[in-house]
Length: 234
Image (cartoon, rainbow, N blue to C red; front, top):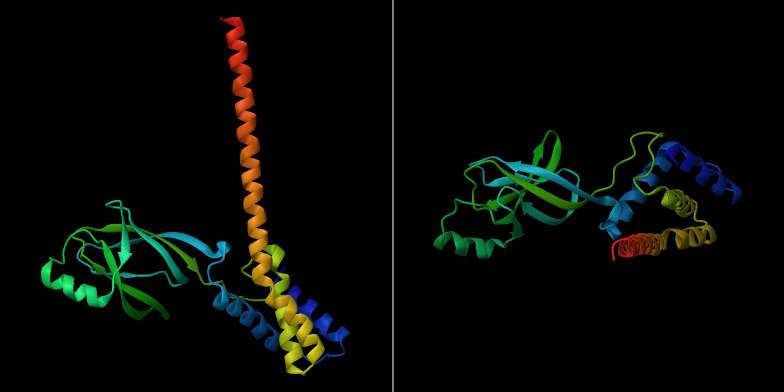
């Protein structure tokens, strides 16, 4: 469902409870708030997991992280096939005193942020400074996409789009101080984490079950072929 459809559903539920005066722009802000709330309480949902490549130019000792990065999982130096690990600044100062700073990057440290193209992006420093262009694979959880207009769907699997509608109903209930509706809608909103986790567990079990069935089918096929050849060529 898109934002328009979710907003209309929320309006209908509020109307059934006797509440009619809600501006579209206010409800749209509640839809954005819903996604921000979900990402704040739990940023590591599988559907926000992302893999991307970043190149650090030779002679540069810093990397600009992707603008949508929320939580970094791992960084892999593809050029030299090694994982790059986080290092604390206090440890880094000690290392600088004893080791050369040029070579194959093996650690990174927090360096701050910078406005790039109007977007505030985080920057990390590299220890050591590569002498040649070096490619890195970043695995991270991204921030959810924003609603662009009424045709935009929530950045969630479709079976969880209802969460945004319930969140808008809850904010509407808070706005007009309907305690009963506030409690019932919040109960639906607050169990989103449990619902998503259970759905993910079921999908993993389903994939494992399908994989096991395929493996068993392959084994039975191989055994039949083995029996055939043994009968033909004893």
